Length: 438
Image (cartoon, rainbow, N blue to C red; front, side, top):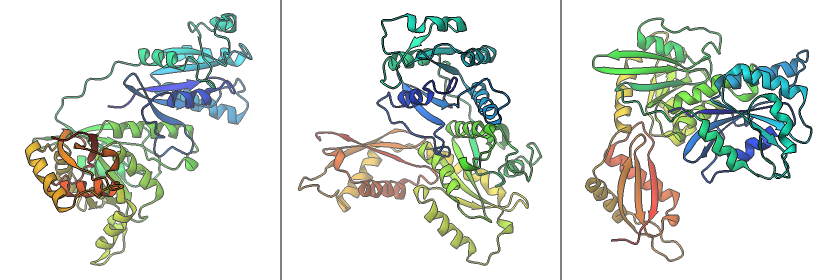
């Protein structure tokens, strides 16, 4: 399910970015920059008390509408407010209440979103006079913090989690949710329209036509699908319109709630660095994936072109060698009919469960044929394995020295599982835990 969004807003130089970094670094769990937007470090996933959410850092809002740059930053902040489930309004106790603070407060009151008033740069938490004047903003009790020293950040995160919307119940529907992702103008909407058999979505040669993630229901026989057409994700350096930042965020959230991701490439351009980032997001989220090479009708080819192209894709997207590749043309309809059966196949593989007895039979044979390398003269012994979840299939291997299982041996075990059970189209998660044996 998509994560809730927490936006950090305020006037310039109140310490928003410092707070952003402190909040995302205040937990023990791993903090990741969201792929595709890492250069501007605007979005980052965070977790507190078991709740995951996405933090959005915005530019400072100033009351100078005649300044084009200020107007653009303000527009970006307003987009963040539109996306946010909770807003952190940061003020500066050193400079005190300003006209810009009052301008931001008015904007927040109109947003209708839950707001936490964060009084930053507090050094003496016993002095209530440092925050008293901010009550005039009419946004409740100011919460004193020191972002730079990390003081009271835990209390702030507690209040954030308390205000987050209730965690959604996992959908029980039988429809397979499919996110269609890729760079602008690679033909995502055209592919969806071909699958629908009608012009349900707007298709344009102008990149960036699709601003929102659009859900479209489709049924074929007894099978049901929800196709999620998303905005094109382009490099940060090419995002001139602040609205596009939030189109990217919606696209990334669409991937989170999908069962299968269709990664659409432009056959006339090959695999770009941005294609790698987009494909990598689904992979990191553990999503089953299919690589779609569109515009194949425009590629000059002979009887070996497809094989050469597939080899190139496997090299460029080596981290997802499990994903099947389809060469299609949304314009002519060439091979589009193969997409839905491929979705069924990889969706089933992502949900595959392996009986513990059968799994351990394969693992014992693999270990017997190629034992794990010893480390500093100490033998690594794998005692048994079990599958603990699906989507993606996740396996725990119990052994005496889990920290010494080299990544190359982990890859060997993954290959053995794929050889025995298939799992085409889905990543696998292999975890290693300590056990004293049987």
